[in-house]
Image 1 (cartoon, rainbow, N blue to C red):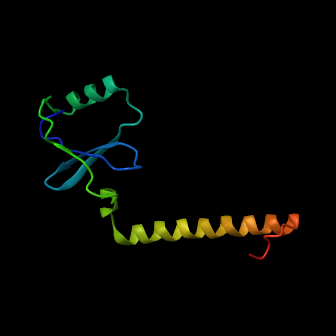
Image 2 (image 1 turned 60 degrees about the vertical axis):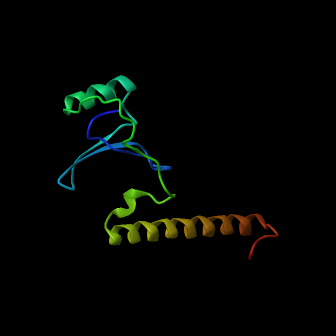
Length: 107
């Protein structure tokens, strides 16, 4: 662990190292591309000092993704796109069923 670093585990999210200054995000580094050694090297290069205090690990209290604290309009737009993709997949499956003469056609 590192001094002045809090770890938040986000179910289903790719790991990012996010640096905040005075409550504003100033840097975001994707960790999924780094090896364990590269990650520790990067932490040192960013000026973080190692600590053996494990009280700065925050387990998620629920399945809510803290990344969803983004702009509500952006979240609505993403939800609409997911819904549109879902409808399109459903329509494509229905068309395939109709082409094959599936008994589920029309359901």
